[in-house]
View 1 (tube, one colour):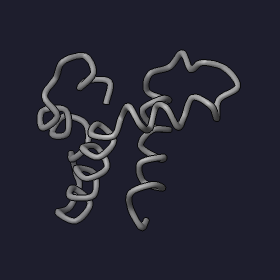
View 2 (view 1 turned 30 degrees about the vertical axis):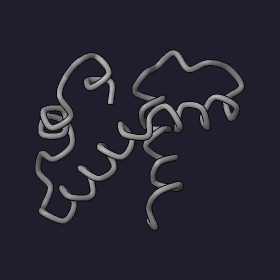
View 3 (view 1 turned 90 degrees about the vertical axis):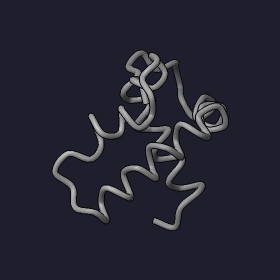
View 4 (view 1 turned 45 degrees about the vertical axis):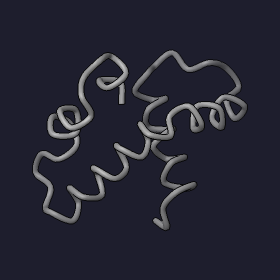
Length: 77
């Protein structure tokens, strides 16, 4: 997600970070989680902030927590 926020295209970021060494089914799941997290980022960030005791300094941690919230809110897995 950080790559997308810094200006990379979503498909480029997914190809670079999410799909290396994955079979077709896992690659589809990675694509769904990544694209959904980016699509709903503002909502997920608004849900995440009240759950934190202090602001996160690590953007990767924020991205992973946002991905987890996406998975809880929008998927059955």
